[in-house]
Length: 118
Image: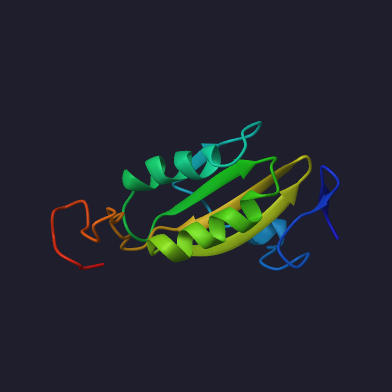
């Protein structure tokens, strides 16, 4: 079991863990080492907006909370969470850019001005 800062790395211990040699190549590397929630996800969102569907992004962090935040963010935003690799004291998390979803306003409209579409 990998620990980082005294915490178990990964939801359920090793769930989603990739072998270091199985880590996918990334079109973008997002450095969020030394930053805490929500900044790693905000940086990831900004980078992903500039990427194309199917490209892989790598998020580098030292905050194990990202192991919970990134998979949930990917599911909510239409991206594919690929897993993580531990390189203490850092973690490398990977996602494949999906079609994405527009954030919704409080009124239930997407920000592009449409009605209730996803």
